[in-house]
Structure formats: C-alpha cells, structure tokens
Image 1 (cartoon, rainbow, N blue to C red):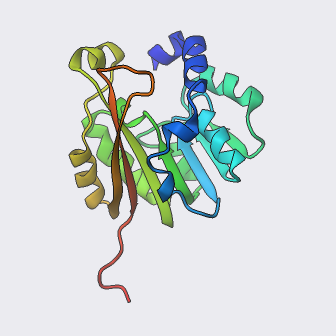
Image 2: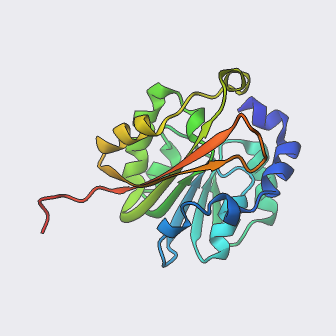
Length: 201
C-alpha cells in the first residue's frame, strides 16, 4: 500500500471530493431498505462509511493504511468503528464473529491477486448475513497503469465464477464511466447475495 501512504494528502482530498451518492447510484436500488450493520472494506478516507452512517447504518470501517485511518477518524460519524485489517484473511474482523447486512468493497478488488480472491470471497461470504448484500466494484484500466500502481486485472466473469462456488449469486451487474473523466479507466459494480437453496421450502 506504499502508493496510498506516499500520496495520502492528495488522495484524501481527491476521494472526499467525489459524491458517494453519485458514485454508488448504480447499485443503490439493491441497498436494504432498513439500515443495519455495514462493513466498508478498504474504507480509505471514510467517505462511504460516513455516507452510510448518515443513512442510519452502523459501520465497521476496515482500512489497513494507518495514514488514512488516522486522518479519517478525526471527523468520522459516531456510528463508525475503525479497524486495522485487510483482505484476503480479515483475521481481526473474523475473530469478532460479526454478520453484516451490507458489505462494500469500493475500488478494492483489483488490489488482490488472482490467487487471493477465492480466499477473500470465502471470508466475505462468511461475514454476510443471510439477507445481506455484497457490493464489489471492478476497476478496468490499461496494463501500463496497472503495473505502475501494482494492481491486477479483474473481470465480472471471474468474480461470478468464484461466487457461484461459495454460496453467492449475482443480483446485478452495472457499468459506468470514470467520475474523474479518465478515458482509460472504466468501472463495473457486481452485487452478490446469498444463493437460495432450490430445495428449500
């Protein structure tokens, strides 16, 4: 996470400048009507965690970068608890044995290598309540930028395949352009939910 530590001040202001309501508009119809427990994994500046807390959610904000945690916790909503942890294992979070109605991974999945993603999704499935929603955004960009930032290629097909073997089903897939206007960057958002047992009554 050296990129984020080295550019904390610049990135903090840049990320906070984006409206979460606009950023997450594509999956908002899938948001549970009644606020419950949410987990923002890779919470960064706390932008999305504060947005969810303002809507009544009790949020666990998971962020491995100490510089972001320190700065974000200075002005965060009282319904946010910050936690130093990271994917794929989320060891500290799992030890608390929580169940979340909403789990959000915004601009996080590309930081995991292909070999880490199956483990990560198994952990996320364990953390998701039976009526919960798991939201994962996928960042698509050219290979040179991925190498420069140390991120990996992602695809909806790969994510859906991993989900299907971990008790998760796809609720929606949406696409959008980059809100910073970068022509070489585009986004998809995949919403996953616990798969229903076809044999259940």
